[in-house]
Amino acid sequence: MNEHKDASASRAWRDCGFATKCVTLDVARADATTTTLRVRHKDLCQPSTSNGEDDDGGEWVDPYFFDRGYTLAATTGFCRVWEGAETLCAWLESAGERTRGKRALELGAGVGACGLVAAALGAHVCLTDTRAVAENVTRRNVEENGEGDASAFAKAWPKSARVGAGSATWATLDWYDDIPENPFGNDQNVGFNDAEVILAAECAWLRDLVPAFVETNRALLSRGCEKELIVSFRDRSSTEDASSGKAFASYREVARAFEDAGCVCEEIQRSASLEDEGKDIVIVSITLRERARYENGERANAK
Image 1 (tube, rainbow, N blue to C red):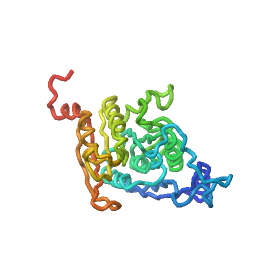
Image 2: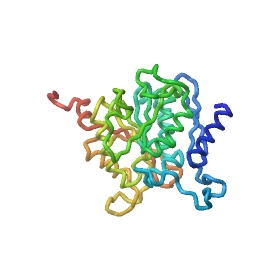
Image 3: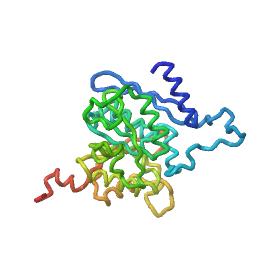
Image 4: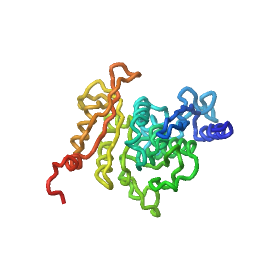
């Protein structure tokens, strides 16, 4: 990115209501080339104005505070590339065949690091989040890293831009609402159910989020083409007891919720958190149990 484009992007983000920091990600592609991504997030050390006050001299207020669906959990989508997302990005680079050439859907994308890395590696990704986050953070990072129209790709989502070897676009998906039938408009015949793989990093960290997150994914997994959900989960809990009143969900608690919803969870990587001693980051592949039985030849007379 040249200096002029970088300066323009910085001004655009300030117009969004806050100053930003920029993380640079170098993605090694299968063709031995590298795609450099620039992922911006809210600068928590610097308010929207230099003195932390608005134009009337009062304290600065988050510009999206009163937006529908904008919760405490949603605010984290503006803040940073979280450790669980960094771990998933690294795993995607090492296992590019899991997403390369596929139509992918990212849930709770936030600043969009995972979806953009998957796109750079050759996936065709739609990054989603609640409206305030999707429109004001995810969209901006997709646009900043886009390099022209991607309609030449058969599996590109509508309105996608080229990113590395793949493509990316953005859309709104709130887990507390019904999955929209026409997220890209009535003139498009592509919807979220057409995803071949779903990505999510650090999305179910609060217990209050788990039921909606699980139900949204169960619905997506059960519709359209066969697909898998790849989740990166950083465990922050101090207990696995949901009745304890603790806010953070444990990995086992989330896995049980998926299993109770008819899914199979396969742990594919576990690593120690560098930010939270004694805690782990787990990457899990989740599929529907019925489809897993079918693949294993255990479903008889399926018609």
